[in-house]
Image (cartoon, rainbow, N blue to C red; front, side, top):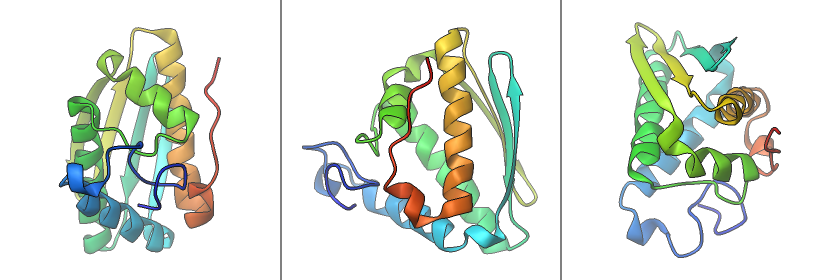
Length: 151
């Protein structure tokens, strides 16, 4: 990563040496940013969260989308947060136990439904979905921005 407070990376004290999956997740994320022009994404807000479809017609990009989503959900499930300098990402990981995640691989990527019975967490999910789309739209420049937690 870029180190604490400098983008995609672990919180202080949780560097790649203490998280063997970190470098692989990092590489997949950067691959997706580098190939963002080949990615299309739709978001549907639900009363309790979101549904998204993220796909690419390039098989290698589609496979990396699937790998990235699986890796990020593994991090959420096992409490291995990333990008913790960003308030929105901190809030997502702090509320991970309140999030229900469903995924289904498509021929070109992945369909995801994230929901929560907690209205604040549902808004966090909706805001996070927008930020993921901003990563696709803006690439590496979006990485350096902080994203507000909705109220």
